[in-house]
Length: 115
Length: 109
Image (cartoon, rainbow over all chains, first blue to last red; front, side, top):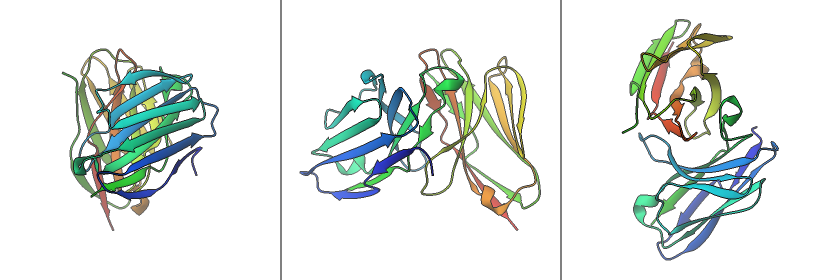
């Protein structure tokens, strides 16, 4: 078991729903990340937080809204999603942003299906 | 643009050796990572290379040549549990990880 947990593990939602994904890390890390993983595609970085401050937003649509209340918790709020948003959403954390201590440790992911 | 290339799928036999290649073109280089991902699970960290040469860690070794923009992951004494996808990722000048699409490794008895 890794030190990064995610809930829920599976989520089915309609296009008009609002839901939130939760990530918690127990590793004492300072940086946290949200990724989207679609079948046979590279991992897509969505957001990066370092010491609770957002340092990266990779042109992600506004229907995805991140929140980082502290260095251990990260949320992804979802609203009015599209079917193409169906994917595995992975949370990761790292001690720092750079180098060997930038090694990222992943949670198990949330499998999202948008109907 | 930034690009990471690795084969889509490879097949190997239990007990054998397999080499998974990764070539990259990125804006800057701050290290190369290999991850293992079993189906339906999270990626798990395998290795980190920032200097040229071979890093050995048990049955797994990772090699880097920065001048050639090339790395490989070598898996020895293959076991059935090694069936997984192997992801290559390069940390660019902005300290972002650029990911390859992964190599699905199938191990046959």
